[in-house]
Length: 182
Image (cartoon, rainbow, N blue to C red; front, top):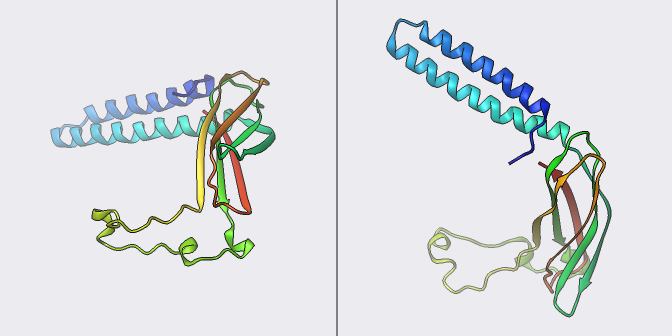
């Protein structure tokens, strides 16, 4: 659940007024089938408007930045550790700060090119059999998502540290990080 601010309440109030106007206009219909279809349509449209308005208000009022992102591989336990800082640069509190890291193996840059790196053959029976004992291909992209801060007040900075298993076959890795607030 997201933390609501006064912009959320304004948007939801406008959607509620539209809902009331739609319900009143549908009750003015003399035809019973027309009234029920209008009630259904008004309810459906205002529900979607409410959901999208909350998402849009979240996008523009909850701003968070990522600072000092560093990583370190722990070779003894085959893990990678990311640590850094997140800061709320908006004017409103943020309920959850999510950090997403995407690692992409660039084996072709080192000359380690195999057909399985780019093409994974599949067929209709793979949906039912799971490949029937055929060796699975190794994933070349890993995406991990972590909640690194909760209830981040405006201007507040929190330090985080996350770790996850690192594939030993990855060579010359590109990393893409993204942080978002809800």
